[in-house]
Image (cartoon, rainbow, N blue to C red):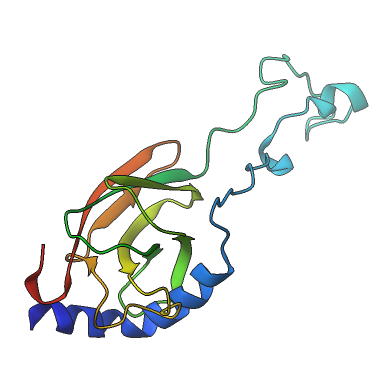
Length: 178
């Protein structure tokens, strides 16, 4: 009973998640982050002879020339386990809350070999809730059906810039199965 209540709390975001996962490719790749030009010192003040408030030319020591800003995003690495006998496609996503739409998601065609590691890159720093399900009959793009194994609880990932947050997730059959 507790499991069904948990899944029903997630249902509004699971519907949005299904749409997101359906639009994702099986071998999802994220774009490489680009450097924000506003945070990179190009050393242009010394080249142009611009002046500070004192009227003196600004001198650029060249120390920062070519340096790029540090990473602004992190990574989530979800390690999923499932000991049941069912097979199907795996859908996983991360959310800011149980009622929010997913930030990102992946749908991976089955059969899945467990343990399975799924990685999300370029994730903004913050705390996220992860949710996953195994679509055993491949008919539930909008969320898990009553027959589908789902992740236990609401595992959280705390993402910091330049780091990987690893989350271990267990997927269980409905109604207390393995």
